[in-house]
Image (cartoon, rainbow, N blue to C red; front, side, top):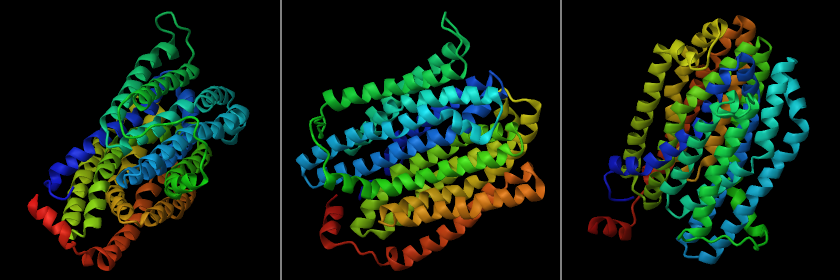
Length: 454
């Protein structure tokens, strides 16, 4: 962390996270590509329930971030019994998170769909999909929880393998269960939901085999009772992480309401964009995940020169990814939409939308990597405020205003405009952090000696 060439270090730390995050994006994209072949109604249906899936992931991943942090700190302090207790409590929290979504999902799925639309075909397709993915979300909760536990021990590759396996299973089963191939019944959107759950179950199974049978530094004891102190430690980190990710779910929910007021096609276009942009944002987020330990180590070591060099290299990597995404969205919107069996109206609205929204990619790269510096230096609340500013001060008010002024084609511009507002805030906070803390970092003598010897 303190001696390897920065560029090589960042690449070695980032590539497993980039692959893992990209694979996570595959689940919804694969479903959407196949579901779109059923018709625009089916794509609209799963777009309307995407905020619930996003919220499930927010709770699962946010909790797991808290578990990962606590296990890492306890292992670092050589307090192995406490690390095992944290893992045991954390594993049980996966089941608690499952119940939070399973019960309401079964009871209120149809009511949720009718918030947005009265079309009986869309409501029926969405209700079926939503009931399945919520009632059986135990598998995704176990997957994200165990993945973070294993990563806390320094193993990044086995969770990646589990993610790949789940995605492959999903890809294979989607056409079989949606269209009724190889003698299976044609289940439509219900088949897509079943394929997704079976893929998640495959990942969960591999992760649990690694957790319970593999050799690593943490052990889960299912007899361990919940410990109030451990839960407090987990959620002291986990709750802000949940809040940051849940903001995106709330934004998507509100945007679906706004767009449904124009047409179901506008909702479907938003769904297509959401799936496509994940292949641009997820690698950038993976770069950030790989960079954060480097930022944190060098911040703690007082090496401001290495910290800032890592920040600059990570920015270049993220800008490269996001810049490539911007070019693809600007040059090939028609081809991207064709993947989803687009209608003429979807081509018309979607081409405008993809070109307009994708201008947010470059400022978003700056926000993602700068957010990693804030979190690594103990200022994660700044990242939370940045998300709030972008999405609730920026996107939603601008979407409502622009929609009234220029219709649905103007709504899409709320995203890049809001990102510019967020970038101004982040830039001011980065300057403030540098002037108040980073600029004055001094490497202790004992760490200097270690680096000199290395």
